[in-house]
Length: 331
Length: 249
Image (cartoon, each protein chain N blue to C red):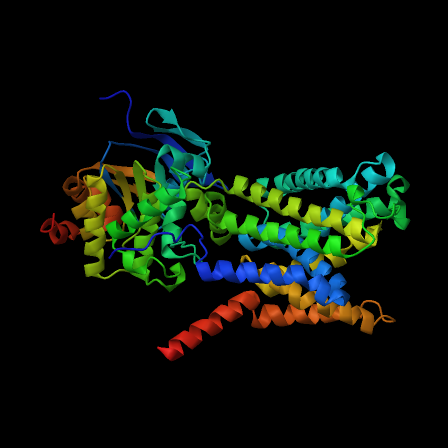
């Protein structure tokens, strides 16, 4: 049997490339066609970017984090404080945020993976670290305390990542999200990407086959933390106000992890798909139940239970199963 | 005797909470040798595998491989040096395809994707799994899973391969296929250390046999001689076993 090549290296066929280009073109035209949904689109892209960050660690490397708000918050706080205190433009601040997130991720990762923590234990370590930072940010007046940080609006200042209109943020988040998709897509074709999967599937078997599982997990942690921190910086510049609850809060950890889990953990498009489904729902329920704050979290809880019970591999896994059934039925 | 031996296990001991699982076990292996490791259940065979491959650290003793002490190295480091293993309870990467499973092993020697893919197909043909390359590993049958265990291990290009009961649960025909595979692996230049309970199979396949009982090495020699050893008969084989097996060796 002459086997076709290219099963390890991901390649897209011509039709897929055409589809990708068409979708991107449509997304670029969207601000002029539906200007009213720009805010929701920005939130979809932003949480898809951060969800992709979670996905690298949780979906690919198999380490479920219950505290990714840690990186979200660090990303938001580092760039904002640098801007407010030192006047450093967030365009540089975003790199500092990213670096700070990665260092923090490696620190937490070292503590956890060195001793083989996994499953619920790792999830709790992440939750604990997010809460430590939450408490510290609340209690420490030098970083704004419970009131948070107000980023002064300098008018339309592209050099400071500040825009009076939503369109620039739309394109910024769109391309950041596309960049994260590309990164993960490329990652799937590399040794590191396959090592992530092997580590997730079976730790011991991976080690026996020469995989340094500790290093693989640390690498996954670094990529994951970096992506999520970048999202935090953009979020802060978009809203121009951050406080401990809206950044380090547990809610954000749930927001970030729920997207890839619903979309399909360990798949390239999972976080985006999950974000497309969940973000409008979250915005709508927040508006609908404005006077009962927290109701939307109850709805999240119900969705999470339903997804874990009925769609363990997310919407993408569900779609794949339907396609397979359909193919079998046709054959 | 050559002063730089291939594998040398020097009076290795390991206890679990005071219970001696392995007690001063020592043996050597030559290059391209097939060594059988037998003994009753709980004798410490798998523990010995875990010690050699770095999954457990011995309390005492040294393990030299190509003149280097490998005690204290992590399993992946030992794999880089050229020792790898299969698991008694197979551990396929269930959600990955058969090809990807083997590719994980092949990446041990190179990071180039094209080279890895080529090598992985070659190994799949070698073990006879090429028609199932693109299926998820979870869809494979038990005999195929055992083959996959071996294929993945071969992907790392080992100089010493440790096989932990790869024939358990297979029917005689499937066992014969695996035996043929073991011989072909050796011909390709790899030494093999086999744990097996099927006496006929191990007598036929091994150049030499080491018997352990209660963590102690009680015999070491050619299959026929080990089979006649009164201590081995007492501990493991039972009286009359030789008459049964003699005809096949």
